[in-house]
Every structure is written in C-alpha cells, then in structure tokens.
Image (tube, rainbow, N blue to C red):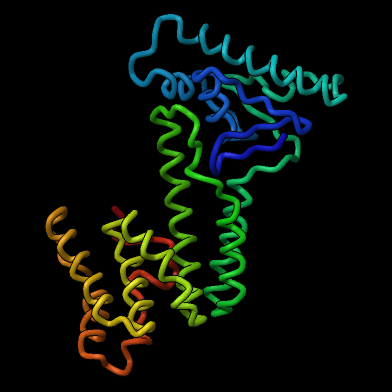
Length: 276
C-alpha cells in the first residue's frame, strides 16, 4: 500500500486508489494513513469524527465506515490479482482499535522526514551543496498543503500542523543553504512570497533582508525589517529579536561584515521563531 498525505490524500493498493468520496470515511482513512502500521484507538477515531459530541451510535457508525473502506480494499486486491490477501489483513481490527498495514509500501511523510534529516545532517557538516540538494528533494514530495482535500477534526488538524511545521523547517534550512552558496538573487522572488505568507516569521524575514542586501538593495532590506517590526509590535507587543536587530544595524551602517551576518533563526533551522 502506498500512502500520500503531503497534498491531497492518496492511498493505493496494488496501484489502485481506495480513497472514498464520502467525507467521513475519507476522514477515517486519512487518520489511519497518518498512523500507518500503528494501532489507532477507537476513541481517537471517534474524537476525530465528532469531537466531544459523539452520537450514541458512534461505534456502530465507525464500524460501518471501516466496512466501507474494507470493501474498497477488497476491490483493489481483486483487480490487482491479489485476491488471496484479505481486506481484514490490511485494515485489521485489533484490541481497542484498527491498524492500516502498508506491507512494505511507501509513505510520503516518512520519506520526507528521512530526506529532510539527511539535509539537516549535511547542514551540520557544512556541506551546503548537499544540504540544498537533499532538502530540495524532501520538499519536492509536497504537492500542496497536507491533506488539503480532507475534512479535518482535532486529531488530523494536529497532525497537519506538525507536518506543515516540518515543511517550514526544511524550507528555512534549504534557503539558508542557498544563501551560503551565494544564490541570493535567485531567492528573491521566493522570499517575497514567503514573507507575505508568514508575516511574523523572523528567520524568513532575516533571510530576505540578507538576500536583498547582497543584491545591492539595501533600502528594501531595511524596509523589510520595519514592516516586520510594525507587525510584531501590533500583533504581539514584541520587538524583533536581538539577532535580527544586529542584522538590521549592520545593513543600516553598510558595515563590510553585514553581508556575512548570520541569519536570525539559522543554524539547525528546526525551531523557527515567531511564525505567523
């Protein structure tokens, strides 16, 4: 079974899609897919579907959704010439819950974490060409917002937030690697969009300031700082970090070392500061 959640939900058995069109069974499959090869408790599935107000028939209705998913799996097994494998062996009932078995298939979010981890290790080793390449490979697995076509309850929403944060961390580090490789001009259009998308993310703003400064656009770099400061003060009552302030002052004074100043939040890049 091959699972994709980094974009629209895709679950394929023998290459045959098994994602239902009805919202609730789709929601159940999405949560099982996020936890593939692990038991998902019945209580967790019920919470995902109905939050704190499950109907009296919640368990029976959940069982109906599971049966619908097994029918789709059985159809895919039959079409794929794998009729000897039962659907119950792939979507298994276990004490207290259900488990979706991948049987050695691919799971895109796990592959993303593997590739991103290799990129982080390359950054730690200061192998910036390899880091940029590996992190780009990781980010290429994303085709849109995680589970963009799934109605999300509290459990899926939490997992989606975690995945999106992981994506942002990898993006932050890939941009940092490109800056270390002096690809500042090529980053300008991407960073223009990102600082609008994340108006309180200090690391991205610092990277944008540095790319602008190195491209001979000092005034625009200083304007980026002022816009961020205005937003942080208005929304959070906070001033920009000391690191970002040092970058701003270095650019303001056209200090010869300003172009080499570390970007705030850089380094490991796995804990972005003040996202918005």
